[in-house]
Length: 321
Image (cartoon, helix red, strand yellow):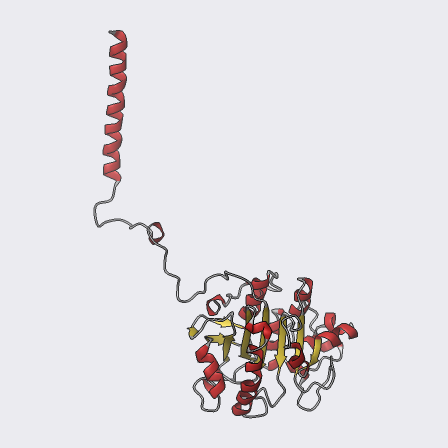
């Protein structure tokens, strides 16, 4: 009897404790319709905010080709009858409608695109002499260290690694001539900073086109000294050749067409992503800038950002597949 009474007592205590806990839980629970609702993440994925882009996912880029045009604010190009090819490209592929240049004038923007900083340079100075050099890490060196290849193609440049203006070639539109780590080795500079005429041969195979290609049209083709229509016609000849090349027809490659800066009224410029890595018929209103483009390349290839500017810039992943 003692054993049975002990077991019964223990059972009674357990039942009583359970009843007390149930009463406490009921008192603490919010009434129907009151209190916080469960997070949407508890039931279904939260929608992606429209003012931010998702992280890069999927396979990396095989090639990146960047063409930089000159001094045209976005509203002067988008919808313009003088730029039918550019508008066709923007409608067929991915367009960043809220993309900003960094500053004025040209050179600091080119440096921002390729090093994540203007390196203290605020004008369009020429590189000869120590006063106008950017002694900072740059994307060319970073790409080479990652085991990839790169080239700068400058239209109307009379010879590889030309450090001074010549005819319609403006050295201020060739940022790699401002990095001493590139120019101090003449042979290496001549192999990497080349006239635009070499591009046709390099497009012949995916193996000969460098992983990273930066293209600077001359002062007429880039719309600096010539009308928008002239630049549009130049792009209508050169861009199809790039998109039809083996590197773009057989690999996951990206072509970017953008402008170095706008005008005094607005520094908003177009940035078009084209090629197999770009989304089709897509427009993004996310706020991007030149640092974002650099960061997008860095993240795709696992390259560490070079400054806080590119490290903190949003990656343009929503424009890519």
